[in-house]
Amino acid sequence: MRVTTRVDLKVGKRIMQVTAAVSSVANSPFEFRELDLDELRSNEVLVRLVATGVCHTDALLRDQVYPIALPAVLGHEGAGVVERIGSEVTAVAVGDHVVLSANSCGVCAQCISGEPSYCEDSFGRNFGGTRPDGSTSLHDGDTPVSSMFFGQSSFSTFANVAERSVVKVDRDVDLSILGPLGCGIQTGAGAVLNELRPEPGSSFVVFGTGAVGSSATMAAVVAGCTTIIAVDIVDSRLELALTLGATHVINSRTEDVSTRLQEVTGNKGVNYALDTTGIPSVLKTAAENLAISGTVALVGAAKPGTEVNFEIGLSLMKGWNFKTIIEGSSVPRTFIPALVRLWKQGKFPFDKLIEKYPFAEINRAFDESERGITIKPVVIF
Image (cartoon, rainbow, N blue to C red; front, side, top):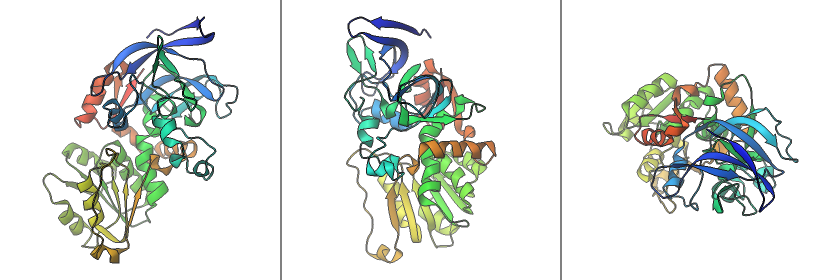
């Protein structure tokens, strides 16, 4: 792919031309375009992308379930090499290998308390399509292109990335597998290890065995859960779950989930449940099968306005808990390297989830992900 630089005489700024997969029309395939990447800001890092994961959240924005101004460059699981740094950047240096994760402001009460996933400006910095000052990093001629998605917009050969989205990783690990740690894998693992924190010997069930659910299964093993149940409708994914550490699997198309969960737990219910689907009926089933003082957590994205009903009469005596979780409630700069260390020790084999695609076949990657053929697609530049 061709990369050139030029000087735009009208604005007097150095411009890099990049190749990007652009979402131009809702519910339509990505189009490849040559776009102008603007001058690096003082708090940004220029990254040459090596690979980027394909996530369900990208599809939600592409299809305008969560609206973003079009045209837009999405992508939020990038991995690459630092080419330049802004004058204020201290977290990385030129030549560093990096994973790109979610953006945050760094100064609100949540950020300074170690909870950047719940940054007060999280929506604007991750879904707004612009920098905080309203500018975009990408243009198609004179047309602004929504960018800085999750502080990065990694469906592009190069990206100006917010410093807080950049995580330095070991150079001895293949960058082509690391991108998904920035969101999907971090979300599933973090939901278990950072939020639910199950006790050794406890029971855990995950609904949905895509990248997030599979990562949660592996994390439950790391945490010491001894009953780990995976629920899905695809037998091949359930078979993989068993190799990742699940002790039981349930196909919700052919089995009654509640009956099976009670059988597995001796009618006591599960201590911890994680819903990765965002489907109200699934979340309701998860809550109904909790043990006393059990906790159910939701990480699956649903259309704004989606609601679920919980029984609050008899369940009052159970003292159960419900929480929502974003990005695994993690601090990416510490949690992502921790996951890499677990992987190196053979305790977190997330690479088993990955299927690689050339960047030119990004639309096939999305299609095969949506059809359940691939658990975690990664496009390679």
